[in-house]
Length: 330
Image (cartoon, rainbow, N blue to C red; front, top):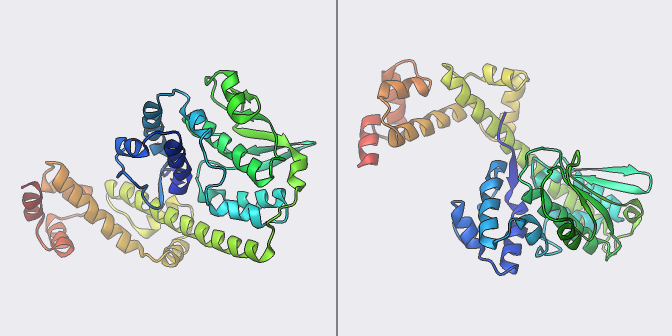
């Protein structure tokens, strides 16, 4: 129903890998419409992965750019999930702690751990059609991180990749230190389950509690933003159909209207303010970027009468729609 998102922290190590490989990350960022020198804060649509990796492949001159950059990734990226590993009693305990908060990195990973006898499988998603460079890079990042966290005790047996076409087998073995199997049912890293019991030299219960508290707060913020994003999208859909009420949006979210109002209050917003904000932004965009007649814009923003729209727009921006359009296009 809404765009899946990744946290910008997921891409920072890739930027570091581009720089470590001698490539200019600013050129890649510029090609996908981002300001050179920095990534934007917060989360961004997962659909942005495709143009990013296309630009990275062209900048690196390597059709297997995910594998290429995996070989240049730093072992540690300074992520909160890494601190959960380090402060836990064992590697396995740290992995289980981190997996509870994997959504801090991306909506698409759906990562979890499976134990099959002496083998363990870290599964990190099953979305067919994903740009192959992203999971190929991610598998390399996981292996590199786990090797550092266990001081070399982590040994991967196999990497499973869902896509059918990829790099030569030797290229995967060179980057991962193990074979890769293409055309698998899911993305996974297979390894010896015994390493889960390896103690952490940096275990600290007090730090673990602090890191978990911070992770819970960050996850609550992600969920808050997700709810607001979904409500905004549904408001837009309902306005096209003639109106957007709290009850209509709540029904689409399969929750009582009272519950939605409470959750929005906890998120620090009011439903009516979201409707107003959406109408205002849509009206401005239509006035500046299209030649739609005012009557059409009135209908698309959910107003029943042009006079009501005129009064609301004057209240929002301090000038009439006609004045706003004339000044903006002039």
